[in-house]
Image (cartoon, rainbow, N blue to C red; front, side, top):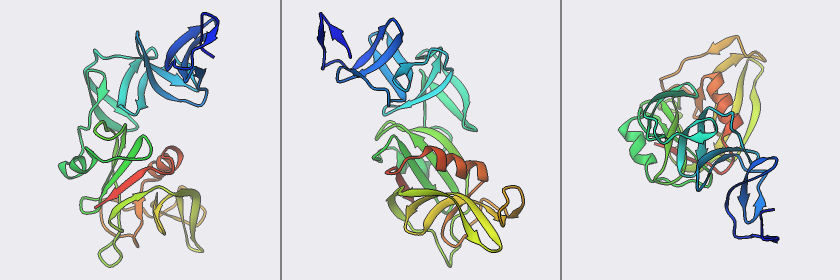
Length: 239
């Protein structure tokens, strides 16, 4: 708890210290469940499980966007390019911008809202998936990757949806698709097609073209990243 003059300060929402380190306080209490970026009077800090991580160097996310961090603190003086999750991003005054994605995607993402700090936008014509972190009006590009959506006879569903579930794999006796993330009924993000039970023997690894039965195929590593990192409730826009 945050104690001021012997009394719990339930109005405290900040980053404060004790003899064990610096901590993220919400409603007067350390929030051990929080991982992200939070601020106090001295700056913005990388929080892992409620505690400032002074050893962190990289990109951190909160509902204001994604931020370039050095020594656990947002570096608002940094301007330049950084690589994040395999994507080249531009940082302006410490904040990762939405650069690098198409106008068609960025125009849809700019003021989209999501129930989480994540947003996925899929362009089925360009065969691209963009993943953003932040919140409405404050999205930063995390990934911009090639995909294979549905072919013209079995198109991927269009509209706005939410991530509803995930699983390790599915398939038939002749093939396996790995790391699926569900966003509408049987419509999923998942890996390209592998021979049954294998993660190395690719049966159909083509990307950048419309050829699936309706799902959005991705490289194995990208499908796994979405499976592991994107929470249920995340907005998915498909056009």
